[in-house]
Amino acid sequence: MYTKPTGNDISFFKETLGADQVITSTDDIKPYTIDKTKNLVGTASVVLKPCSAEEISKLLGYCSQNSLAIFTRGGGTGVTGGAVPLDDGVVLSLERMNRILEYDANNMTLSVEPCVITGNIHEFAQEKGLLYPPDPASSDECAIGGNIAENAGGPRAVKYGVTGNYVLGLEYVLPDGTIASSGGKYVKNAAGYDMVRLLTGSEGTLAVITKALLKLVPAPPFAQDVLLSFNTLGEAVDTVTRLLAASPLPAAIEFMENDAIKLVSESSSIKIPFATAGAHLLIKLEADSAQLLKKQIDNLYKIPGISDSNLKTAKTDKESEYLWSARRGIRDAISRVSPVFFAEDCVVPRAAIALFIKSIKNELSSYGIDSLLFGHAGDGNIHIDILKGKTEDNRWEELKDELRLMIYRKALAFEGTITGEHGIGFIRKQYLEEAIGSGAYNMMKKIKEAFDPKGILNPGKVFQD
Image (tube, rainbow, N blue to C red):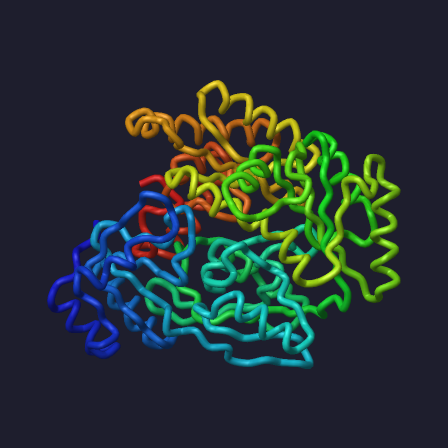
């Protein structure tokens, strides 16, 4: 279906971009054949580093005419293989397209290129007294284009929503080389199909994003982090229900179950408060005044089961960082005790969190497999990390697909779905049709075919071959 790039193709690429922006050395290509997905390595014949929509237009037009598969890459921080090239394809690295293009103070918008690091957007907004709310865990290294491609979330999603809620407009290049744009600085838009929403979450399969117009919001002047401990996860989830009914809504409601708390406590230098608790909730409160913030904290004590004995507030930025260090340190702790593991990010209705986790833990225990569960209690997004530990290699390979299927089917049984923020990519494509149903799945394939009739953009991802 696809052809491997030839000498003539390489010559065209060098003529279009300049020889120094075309990588053909095997050793230099290697870093572009992986992302953060465990044990997944792809193959590529060439890496291209364009710096404009016009250059990308020429490259895509040529690749379409010559049946060359294109794999777009931003920060390379995905965990489902979405940016991993296959079958000696062409990597389109957007690393040079990393500029903040325009800040519009009157409309509170920011125009950026796709490889601007998300953390840099946070810092820019903060300097203006504003906030760009989406905050994926890898924000210090992930790129905004990848965030849009995956519709990334993060802890603040419970109050503010996910990346797609802050994308007002996109410039993009279609597989045949056509440059198009959709959306703008306006708030309402009823002019035709919502192309911005369609491209958001499309995982690099429909078009190459070359510019994004982002919405910023006023930053809350006062905020405070609070850690709550509970004897059981059920008590913690009951509290989540009450927090979600409160006004104003907390900006974040994160949870860790006992095994996660224990692992971080025992395998790192982090001194966790309430280290023997059955569950933690880490919440962020925001307010327009110190008085209103204090009122929110006072209201926490009105929730049954909350008292000074299981509540700790952060009085300073350093104390906030300390409270968050355990939640952020889970993956590092896992890597120390089990360098080989796989991670899932299912979503269930928030009221089902406790029962879902209990069901998953019981099932995994029957396999003799260790697991850690944590995540975003405020939006029902649960990270399920399965540890290889001392499991023999052959047994581990046999179990991975079986365990994934078990986890996904349990999420669906609890009226949830198989991924909340990491996407389908390569490693989950065989499960998508069961998750969304054949009708929706076939319609998605038709949309893909309409955008990309030759199938050159990120082939082998999202859909079964």
